[in-house]
Length: 139
Image (cartoon, rainbow, N blue to C red; front, side, top):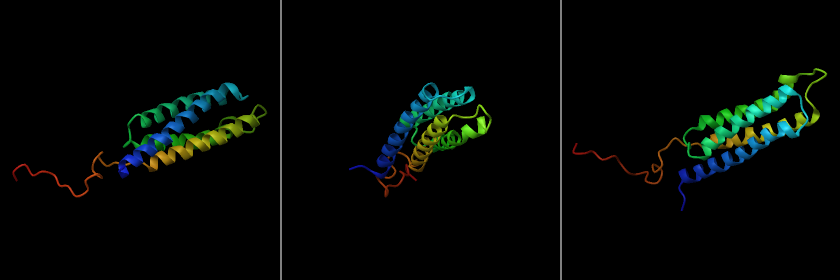
């Protein structure tokens, strides 16, 4: 039987693991999807950042929900970055880059929110024994 805390941690690991995969794609897409210099750099940099934050969460930083909130914000940035960086200039973002960033950014955003909302600040066993009290040590 799993406890509420174990279930939440499993969900954090699942969301963060999937976010690692999305980050790997974001990084690879900089080379695969036709784009211009600033967008290539953007996807490389933010692919690495999302990956590092997601690996930290996956590896055991279950109470550090702020890492997932940062990933969610990065997901939002990835969605709007083609227009924010390239604008409507003649050498603006390619259609493929726009579609890629909207889909990948949406995935990173949703997974970051999922992981953030599953964060628990409770100690590992506090939900296992809700009616226990602290020892008084002779008081």
